[in-house]
Image (cartoon, rainbow, N blue to C red; front, side):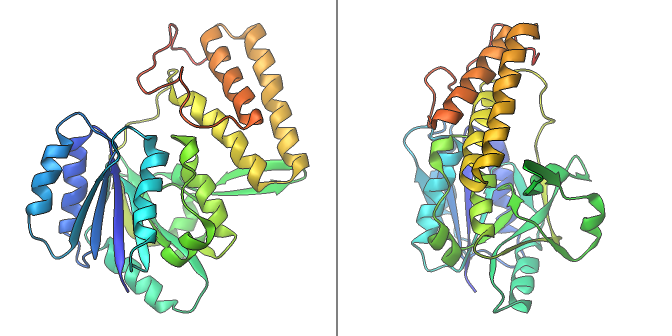
Length: 308
């Protein structure tokens, strides 16, 4: 069994160093570690040049995208490289995800024990600030004409493993044959929901399990309650995801709710900046306008950063 790893980074050199140190410390080493640098400007490129020259039991590959393609473009780039390799499985994570030293060993043992089963991916438990974060492992499904997003309940994490159909890219291992079958990350999303959309495609071709013996510590700050440029992509991309993975009735019902919310925000919300961002996201999501938006580029800041 050959396992490679794809880590996407952008201007977080200290976190990247910690992440790569975790792969050096793994009891079961990856066969190759692929770092996708989204054209960082903080010295990451120079540091990675030195890192590549340090001999370790795994092959080292660095890909510089030349411009910031967003998380979606970064994962697309790394997974495209992995899909053309001779590896069987690919670990996927951001630079702020730190797998514990037995993560790949646990993964290998689990996959070996279920050899022959139709598995598309397995994923880890995500710890944030010392506690299990439920937001990274979900089920999406339709119920009575509505699209439901269900967080996996905490009790499920007491089992050895459990099924699900949606994961984040924080500590996930994807079957490369399945990756070739369903395709790569939807790079046009730029950021947010790219992993959820990808996992829904993978779940249609095989099982996805969360293996609770695999643990990743996620060095992630609490979700901000202020308005940022990312809000546009989150709202836009979820509309595209639902359009492609649910029936026409469920999707139209969801889109109508978004339109009604947009109207409500323009009338009642104190922050018209948020109304503008949300309405633009809904319009573009319905029209299928994806990619990097010229207005909501990384670093965009609103005049009023309240959410409502």
